[in-house]
Image 1 (spheres, rainbow, N blue to C red):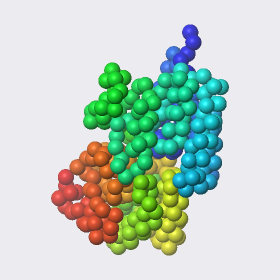
Image 2: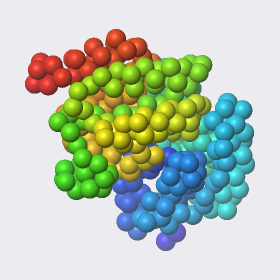
Image 3: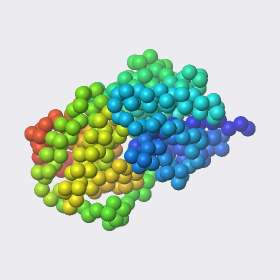
Image 4: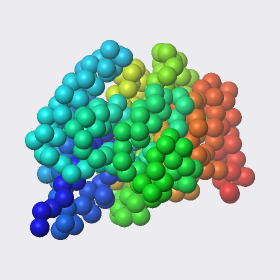
Length: 348
């Protein structure tokens, strides 16, 4: 019996974490053969060479270099072009029966375009969502239009994929992939967690992840400076930063994190990548996830903690009652923290 070849493409630590259990299931299925193509930030020293984490668990079939040495719009477009060429060659070699992609990043757009031209069916996970403050919005919908099977996270997102003209028989609401990890991973206890990051927690603790808002021009620096300013006034609070990804202006934010942590090493620590286990373990012990990462909407609410969602990046997404929205100015962020620590919010 010939096995069906299922090719999974991953470009970031976050998306690999979401795909992990699916990869495990494919690997365990006698009728299927798992192929893995790794690209993007996984192969970049600056973003922690996270492909090594994957290699501990799986065999990687292809590594596709995108040379992410620049986060300007020209640099990213060149990276996308280079990736598309390399993906075309990889598919020619691997001959997958289907390519599985998740989300909305530009490297996934390149992977999907090459698969479409090669007439390889594409399965897309987490389509139909909206993020009005990021060009991911257009990329996500474009990937939807190139894909054949769709696995969305809510009924509303499923309906949006159908609105885009996809046949309802090929669109499935399977829920959010991140919840699978929360249920299946054995998370670290508090002492284990503190040891794993070499950092002691305080009475109050927050996890901060802030990415550039890709559809706004050079606002990353101002917005993040405002956030740091507001955080700095919190009493008895320790801060765990996870760094921005390789979007336009991501490096600006990462440099600011390094400077802040250097000055405030008694209360702050920063990571390129915490990895899935430490990241989800952290959510057990912090009061809130602060910033503009989709994880504040997808995973944080399952830990019954607050999310302070700053600015426009996640505008249009479905949000739990535990998500406090605020503007990227100091007054608004401080008000969000007041609400977070209010008895009424904590009891709810």
